[in-house]
Structure formats: structure tokens, C-alpha cells
Image 1: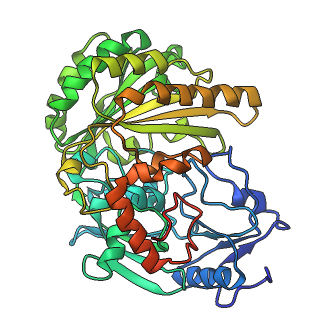
Image 2: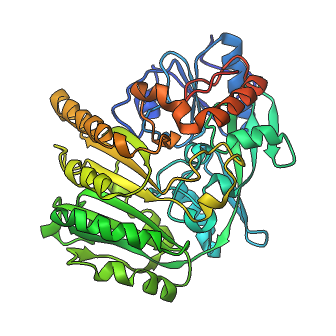
Length: 459
């Protein structure tokens, strides 16, 4: 194909002979190194249409890039075309209707920045540079989910470019089968160029932040947390992090890189109510440092950005848990700190609340009845050796294997890594939802043109 032009395309075309090629193909996960034939950086929906039609006409492998943050690196392919939405980051807020329209290349930091100007928010990721599109299409867990549901529960409509290059509006009233599938089924059905979300009053100041305890206290902290989380109001979102204390400016230098367990909180309500909700947590044991305090919601949402930088190497393993039994806690405490890299960690998300109250088949997200989700994040630097990388990935695999007796039989699709997780896609949905997704796939993408993802084959 000619790479100096695509009919009807006004964006920027980047090939291997361009100075910016290596930057354009780089992803958040620096362990992924793929070389596309062409990167089509789109300026709007019309460019996406042109790029899709061109790719289909020439039989090119297609990858779709939103935020480029997925650990499996599916946003870039070898010797194909990357339909790159990274220049499409606009967010339009309608404060009267409490809705936001968000372009497909936007990051959650972009959404929080604009919505918080109106003291509004919707459920997004826990890292500001995570892409809106990828996180949403896989379900969308975050600190606000127990109060306001997942990102997909707040999705009102989507503009989708189909494999034929048509533009569809998907909502409860238009193409409802496609709308159902988009809410959890990933990027299997087309390129979502615009999302419309419901917003909720929040902030701009919330009670939020982490409390850290020494790693030796992990078993006691998790046993306390099990009961604390079970009794928590829906407004209280919590994430447990097990690893080392990151070297952030707000943390005393003598604590940097010390093995520790943290419980991060965000209360989706008045600060004074939040202070009461976290009081018992702050008083438990002897914390190393307590950073729970009133703070700007948008600042809290971006507080972890520098702990998971672009270009580092990442390898993940994840599963949903049946609960936090003493036996499961023992496994977590035993394996969490065995990583070689001080950047590796495990994170555990408290589900339930509004997430669990949505009917199981209302969306394609299947993990409605799960209490906790755990993701094991192996992290190392690009300059570190292959032996170091092998040690980190082995740690993650052993950790997951040790959790086998406590797994719920499901997994969050956004946390699946690359090739060795391919067979777990059906596990993310269960047989019933997977079959229904395959039927929608057969209708909207019968040729499986969009397969460079957590793929659902037409059925």
C-alpha cells in the first residue's frame, strides 16, 4: 500500500523512516516491542473511518491505540496498521445533565481534570495516565465503583466505527446488542471514537490516601481489613497494595523502598463522613505513615502516576478471589514480598457495593459477585537483565499458582497479560456471556478484523 496517503485521511501518517516512529510505537509497557508498517494518528472520527477502510482494503493487521496502557500491548501490531487515537483527547462536560463526552484517545487524568471543574466525576482508573477506552471497554474498576458502579455502568452511549468503516451510535435505544457487548467485551466490535458517561457530584475535596504498615504486619492487617471492608459503606473505595513504599515526595525518605502493606482509600461523599469511615483503619496497629487526609480528588487520582512509569517493563497475573480466608491471607503474605525488583507489587481491589447490584447479564462484565480481585504486577527497568526479567515473571506465576485454591474461577479481562493468558479470555466472561459476545461479534465483525485484543471469535 502507499504510505504517503490514505484517501480521506487528514491526520498524521508515521512510518519506519520517520524520526518519530520509535516514539509513536512505544507503549506504556516497555517490554512490548512491535514494529507496525504504518501508524495512522487520527484527528477525528472521519480519520478513523478512512484508516479502517484502508486497512480492510489492503488486508492489513489492525491494532487500535487509545491510551496504549494495556499490559499486553495490544495497541501496537507487527507489520500492520495502528489506528492511533492518542491525539483525540477532548472532554466535553454538560454540568446541567451531569454527562461528559470523551474522545477515544483521552486519559483518565483528562476526564478528572475537566469534570472536577464542576465538582463532578465518574468511575475511572486508579492511575491518571490510563486510557479511558481500554479501561472502560473491559469493565472499568476504580475507587468510585462501590458507590457509582463500574465505568461500563456509567456509560450512556458510544460512537463506534465498524469494520466496514460505518459509524454507529450504540446505546440502550440504538444497537442495544452492540451497546451490551461494548460494556465489558473489549475492543472486539469496532473502534470507539467517543464515549458518553454519566457523572456524579464529587469533590473537589475528598477524604483519600493510603495508610502503610510494615510488611511483618501483613497477616494482621489483612485479617483486620477483611472485616473492615465487609462492613464498609458503599462510599468507601479501597485498594490494598503489597510491595515496597514508593519514593514519593510526600513520604519520608527513610521509608522509601521499605517492604510494606498499604490500604488506599477514597470516600465518595462528604469529608467529615469519610473521616468517620476510615477512623478504625487509621487506628489499627502501628502505621509507618498515614497519608489519609482531605485532598483534591484529581490530585489523589494522579498520585500513583510516577510509581508505574511509561517505558518500564511489566508482566501481570491476576484472578478474582472467593474471599479473604485465613488460608488465602497466608498465601498473600507469604508470596507478596518475594519479588526481586523493589518496583514489583500486588494490588487487591474491594468489589461489591453498586458493582454487585447490577444484574449479572446486564452488561458483558461478568465479575459481579466477586468480593476481591488481585493483580500481581512484576515490574523491572528496561536496562535490567533478562535473568532479572525471568525472575520477576516467575514470581508472578508462582504467586498466582499458590492462589489456585482460592480463585473464584473468573478474572478481570483488563488484567490479562499477553500470550500465556490467551486461553483465559473465556474465564473472564464465563460460558454464557462469552457465547452471547461471540454472537454479537459474528454480527458486527464476522471476519474478526478486530482480533488484536483479548479476542472473542465470531460464533
